[in-house]
Amino acid sequence: MDNLGESPTDKGGEPGESEETRATPGALVAADTEGIPEETDRDGDADLKEAAAEESELKSQDVSDVTAAERENSSLLTPAAKKLKLDIKDKKEKKQKVDEDEIQKMQILVSSFSEEQLNRYEMYRRSAFPKAAIKRLIQSITGTSVSQNVVIAMSGISKVFVGEVVEEALDVCEKWGETPPLQPKHMREAVRRLKSKGQIPNSKHKKITFF
Image (cartoon, rainbow, N blue to C red; front, side, top):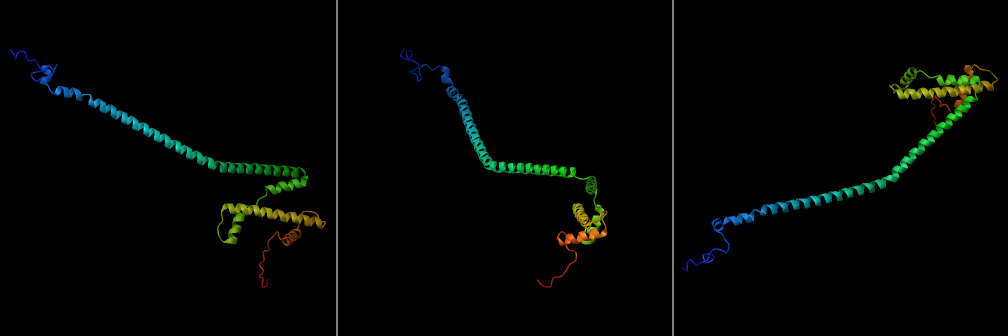
């Protein structure tokens, strides 16, 4: 009779514990451990999000630092760049102004020419030494080949030199009371005068013994 009155608690069981629970002691452990991976995943996601936020913050800080450095460098270079730009602009304006002044002066000079002077001017502008002849002359004197730029420069210099000699010869002809066309004596006298003025170098080498 006493045995019949024993409660499940007296038999070593826990209150409210069923037979199935006692039969499967690992059920509670399994039930308790099912939530652990979810919490671990959540913690991992939070850590990743936090790391990503920190990385993005560092990147934004680096970008801001680089931008500030670039702005500082640009602020340092800006005055020099502005000065260079202004200098180039001033040079262009001055060159354009000089060109315009030269064109205006030339127009005034040409408009004051007589018909004969205008014809002479046009002939002088159109005249040019043959570049092949100039090249052969330079090569025969120097003994070496020259570039085309040297030939063009020498051709222009020769044209200016001949123009100066002819202009001086015309002055000689006028001073002597003679009229054109020019004669060899006028040209020789013009060359002599230009040499005396130092405008033509002396081609004859003279050895100086005493200083």
